[in-house]
Length: 400
Image (tube, rainbow, N blue to C red; front, side):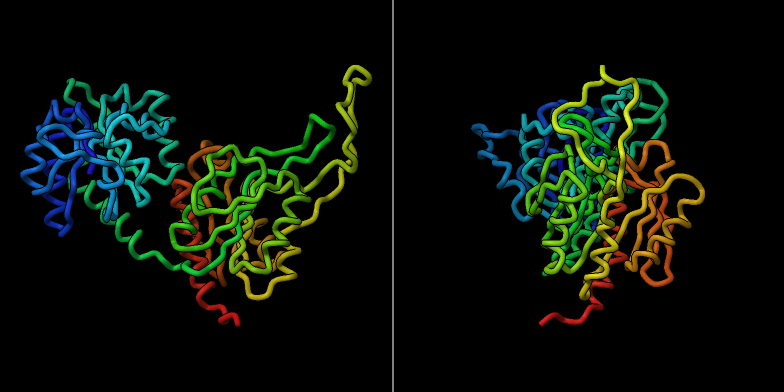
């Protein structure tokens, strides 16, 4: 349990007591600023464990190492999480014991922010929160109300009972999910770029974030994950094998090569439907013409092609649609391509879908089922998609 600087730090003592009543053992790590509000002796007395405050220890406390602190821990909670600590986490800084523990921790992380309303609403904090969500961090939203500085608004630490309830939900889900152990999952992500000349291309707005979330979620459930990615500008994670496939043709070749040995295919990439018939050598000179006509041809439908070659693989497609008819088109795509599930991605929702941290999706299938999900983080969407897909994997015949 990480405690950072702020007047809300005193509430962390209540969170600690509640966690203990739920049967959890809790080790506490504090920033030096947090100690200005609540002494480490209070947490040591309640937890009956040594409190980590220093990267290197001092005369009264043995040296703490971020790997030693993390050893044997199932979940990391930071409550309260100050704006400064959130910014360090989002940027990958390891300037103290707490942020070093965060970078080295491989289990689920829950963060409960607390800060002044103006700081919470600042665009920089919003960007940092979006980054943490994209990294799979679970957020306990701050509440609105009277703050220590007399202002009224969002930024107050969530009630201890709410924090503990959120932690229990995350911990329970994490411990229950090893349902893809021994399963190979092939995922495509990103947007292909089809060259017009040596400089220009036809592309799309896909960021690859949804595919990244699916890959991390599948890995955390025990799967062997292969990611075929097209032009994704996101950090690559451990435990996932990446294959670069910048064009539709390259993605087709990579997916065909990996498909026979996979158990599940999730075709999340935004593959170009058309490409220039012939890319020009060098760079086209725009001074020679006021208009440019590019002849386009259809690309191969990778998902439909692989569906025709399937043995017993589970196949999941994505349909990014725009407008009220999009859901019906997604239903037709599932039938037309003969796949187990299609995830309808509502691209009309502002701040979701392309480039954003959230999604609004409808999971069509398996069978006659259809689940319309509210707006949620892409990692949460990934978990729900895998929840629906795992029974299909279990139902397949055992391979020789």
